[in-house]
Length: 73
Image 1 (spheres, one colour):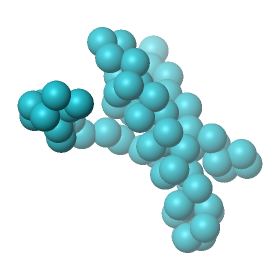
Image 2 (spheres, rainbow, N blue to C red):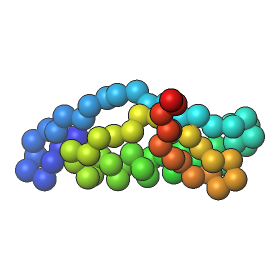
Image 3 (cartoon, rainbow, N blue to C red):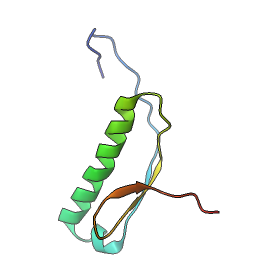
């Protein structure tokens, strides 16, 4: 990816986990909307710079909103 001055910018590649219900996974329209919501969060985090990035997301089956997975205690 090039910046405004033409120099390449490193993009770190780290895996993410998205947990979603079967009802969303089996419906292409819902699946695409859910992934778009995850992409919007990741893009916002990426543009914000040095903020820690969540790597695990959970999809709410009713609203299709992506939320950071809460740590189990």
